[in-house]
Amino acid sequence: MTEQHSSQRFELQNCLDLKFEILCFSSLTERAIARHEVREIEQRHTVDGPRQDVTLDEEDDVVIIYNRVPKTASTSFTNIAYDLCAKNKYHVLHINTTKNNPVMSLQDQVRFVKNVTSWKEMKPGFYHGHVSFLDFAKFGVKKKPIYINVIRDPIERLVSYYYFLRFGDDYRPGLRRRKQGDKKTFDECVAAGGSDCAPEKLWLQIPFFCGHSSECWNVGSRWALEQAKYNLINEYFLVGVTEELEDFIMLLEAALPRFFRGATELYRTGKKSHLRKTTEKKLPTKETIAKLQQSEIWKMENEFYEFALEQFQFVRAHAVREKDGELYILAQNFFYEKIYPKSN
Image (cartoon, rainbow, N blue to C red):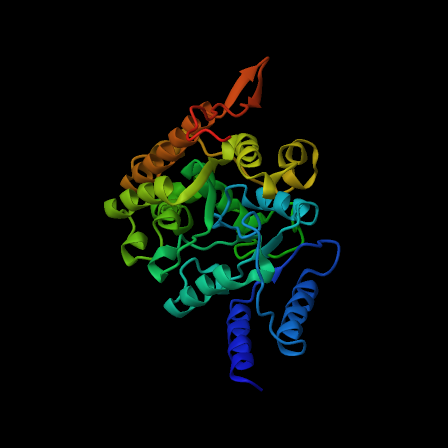
């Protein structure tokens, strides 16, 4: 075997190390399809020989990363990507980390960056998973992926996660959850000072946007909050909010039709988009909410949420117009003139 073939096999193995699940055809067994797809790629590299000059059109040389925050309607949104991938001709890959750990080891960070940037067979690609933000520029990458995300009111997100761990949802109702059997309500948990509803559990959206620095995961860090804000503005193409998910999808379709053409109509009419709902969820009382809001951690997470919401509403205000209670995407609002030198 030539040294070039060995190098190609080594690169491919790195692609497989993160256990990406290629899940475009939901009617078949998901993991079986993932294994089949990976075997096909491996055979093309080792049996037929490596593809020397795989060139991609600029429109196809695109990767989107949705580093989804748990319990923010992320499954609902991801279902849209799966439903559209065959029609719009792109790949969807789930980043399956061990125990859903959002922080990658340094070596996995290197592998992941290499996968995303050099795995041409998977471009255009839509990667999604519960992984904190990773700065590709730190690894010398010139063309970075497009980051998107959705966040949620921090108390509502925690309440949803609390009941999800106990009762699951209607997406996989038969799956046994970690806290199944615990009948204590969220209100009772807060009143008793339980760990599952402690203010520290609110600290999640900030570190997901802050990234892989140790300070990001230091609960209550002001530096982490400011870094999360910086990344949201400078590193994310668009960040929506759960409470206005349809508008988020509409903006994505207008700005990135290569991936999201047809997404708005699918969200409005499709069944999968509204499929996942946490079971047995009881809204907290005003007293419970007030108690959590006394925490400095809530104040910081809420500050980040309000910051993201303001930015999203700013983007939306400059992209749509309202007519008869409906939002419509604005047509192109610029053109070129006074072009010199004049052509003959």
